[in-house]
Length: 623
Image: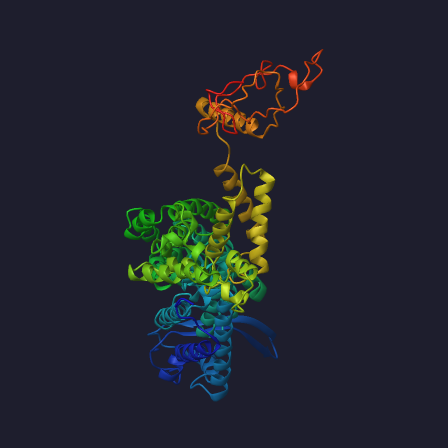
């Protein structure tokens, strides 16, 4: 099996979760250790935030009253006695962190990270890659640290935290499911940093869900703009809704005191709507870094790899022209199918160019490159199978030697996956299987497709090869062929890990049928082609028609002394079948009732001896 990129298993996930949890606990409790007690008579070292709490007051004269209060005291300010008492009562439960607080926080963080990494592994190979998990966990910690800085050193609303700036690029490069999961995890982290702020959790969770619903993976900058605008609108609406639910009105906060920059920055309503817009700009700046860290290829890189002047593509086209023609056809089919389901069509096209690169090393073993001689005729089936299998490993080694990016190399060892070489296996069984081989001995040692793009290429590879066996196929024939290929791969469980849904497979099948029909449609023939075909059909009909036996009059003069005959020569081309002279005289029929005497251009009514008889007569022989 070819060497693959490092993947994360359960043990690795546990180790990553412990490291991630330790870092996250440090972020949450940093200010609790540094400032063990909130000062009442000195300026604050950090901004103090108290989530919405209920204030209950019961007096004999005034009765009872209850209201929700959110307290935010900026860094550098001095608390007034009334606020100091409220904040001190709340902070005494948290500073310094007690063992129950640390135990509960550690349990939440560890469970959150384990569930997140487990979810990533369930999304296929891309989620199981170690680089993917490290990239996402590092991004979460980095955004958590930036959020902590904003919360501790500014009096801005917590809703300015650019959660969408993380969810947008993750969705673009890893898919909607991973983007939504990452956004929800980030929302929980922010709610823990604030400290536990349920309204903020709802607002940020709404942003993550909107981004996952709107953004199309692989989309361009237009997706970022549209996603950030819709996320801002939805988060502002959700903030207004949760405010009405908790306090019966939409609090404007500092915005009600005036239109200064500080009041705008401190308004939760403004931050909930404008924060995602700024996050869209941040996502645009971070997108290239995410692409590189996650191993994704840019359009520029794919364009360079798709250039036919690339040394490996020139090598393939010159040494294995038949394979190169197959790769070109497959690239068209695969790109159309990828576009039909919203996958990365450019990546699939490049993967199709390089998937059979190993055939350029020993092209004579593959039928599309053979010019008459087949080396497999002189080889045992198992030896032939090994020669076919070798093109995968050799292709991977050749591509890595020339620094081809790993996402393209993965197409080389996944397009056959663990499929079986049916021809050589049946040839072995037919020969008696003297070496007691099994079906597994005739299976490729590759990897099952792990992404939608790799699954599409595996299907198109089989469809393109099988379509060459059809002569003037009808639309129903193409549909039957494509369905059989897809059902065969489903039965062999080759497509289990690539994430293709039944809806995706249906759209891929429709696209393949349409492109195959377009590629194999009939064309108008030239006049000279029609004349040649008519001549060939006439010759074939003449060669297969049973000619009537011509009548031979034996009453001709016979020389008692036979004349020596010349050496036999080739019969005249005008004679489609040899004449047979009967040994008995025939009477002349009357009324043309005998079909042998019906006039036709092929059987003349007047007998005529050919120049050369099939039994050796020559032109100098007399009747």
